[in-house]
Image (tube, rainbow, N blue to C red; front, top):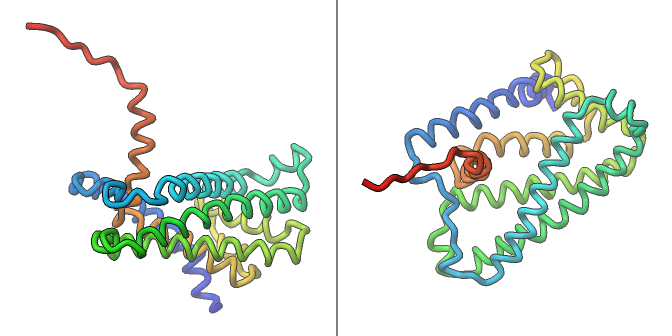
Length: 228
């Protein structure tokens, strides 16, 4: 991959993606609240919705949580806990493989359900197709990195990816330098993962924010109702 392309994709693009993610979500919530929904298709066809939904959400939540903890926890913390780089990589590969397989099963069930039913196809928007297929592609690339990682269990590449992510979130320069020697499958997975943040505000994925809002809603003050 061209040096300047790598510098842009892994050094500048992450900030563009995050800016679109946050600002786009805010603008959509402010201007198009009636489109802020998951557009449930349960009334049109229950079918295998429950199974696919459960598997997909368990898998995707596990993957997102695992990525956040694995990439953003400083290396010194793992060293202090006595977790070797090799052990962490094996744990990450195992947990990622399990959660990835669960998520893959779920999204395949949902894809078959949506595209095999005439009524569901009729209400499926281009944005729906883009999101589902993009997540599927990102997931398949992520699972492919397990095979690439199995050929080098010393944890070196994992540490490089951790350094890249931590340099990005702490606004440090030369984050892209940690990705230069990464196999192509890792680079593609990172690019597609970051691009999910770009398409997020323009699709039904925005309903994820409502989940966080629901948690905050639990701590609301009591409403006082008085009779006249």
